[in-house]
Image 1 (cartoon, rainbow, N blue to C red):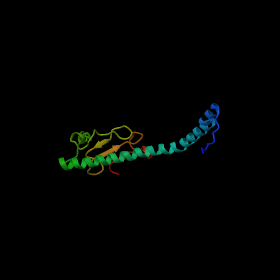
Image 2 (image 1 turned 90 degrees about the horizontal axis):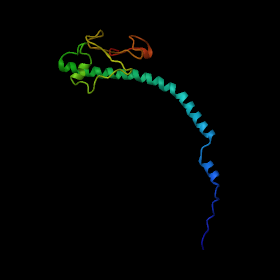
Image 3 (image 1 turned 45 degrees about the vertical axis):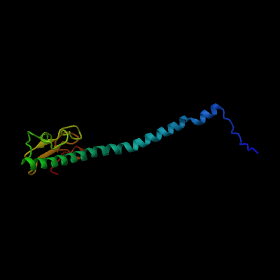
Image 4 (image 1 turned 90 degrees about the vertical axis):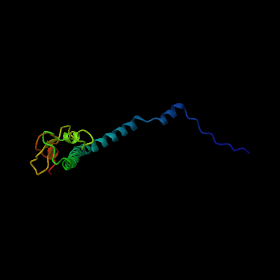
Length: 143
């Protein structure tokens, strides 16, 4: 006894192509959802990017302070203002060249500093000007 399987109806090639594709309305719905998502999320991400730059500057300054402490332990003093942070690289206290701050400018270095016995290290913030508030505020080593 052989068992016969029911035959599937053969679809017209045009019908088959319509079922396999995506309609214009479906595409517009997807694009609209993506645009709404981007409109809601992008401003939040941009605000966090600015705050991330401030945090990165603070971390880099802390790294400089650690390298400067080791430099002073080994050599007895901090680099002068003229030598700057580049002295850390020249004496192999930094593994790479001194990085720019997150806004693409050089850190300011001063020794002797005006805020205690350690050097002053400053990033001028987003605006590149001394002082400022919020994201434009200076990121400094003594705070």
